[in-house]
Amino acid sequence: MTSSPKKCLYCQTENEGATENCEHCGMPLPSKHPQDKQKKISFFIKAFWAIVIFCIVMMYYLPR
Ligand SMILES: [Zn+2]
Image (cartoon, rainbow, N blue to C red):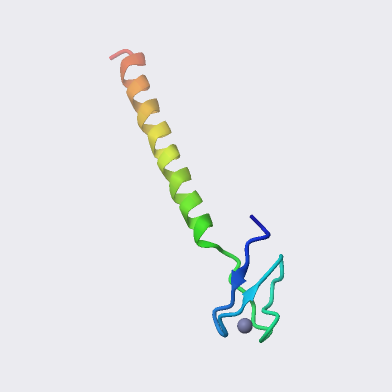
């Protein structure tokens, strides 16, 4: 994951490795990848289903 090249937003140079600044223009590289966003969305969906299942279980478990 860390070996994937980061593309500089300013000069479009792809920087290999875990560099924080662009090797070409020295500007800070974006720390977040699009994959991280995708990972966050999948985590949110998992958390959502966990809450839904928990609610359904509680509906039948709790006496009324
Ligand atoms: Zn750059």
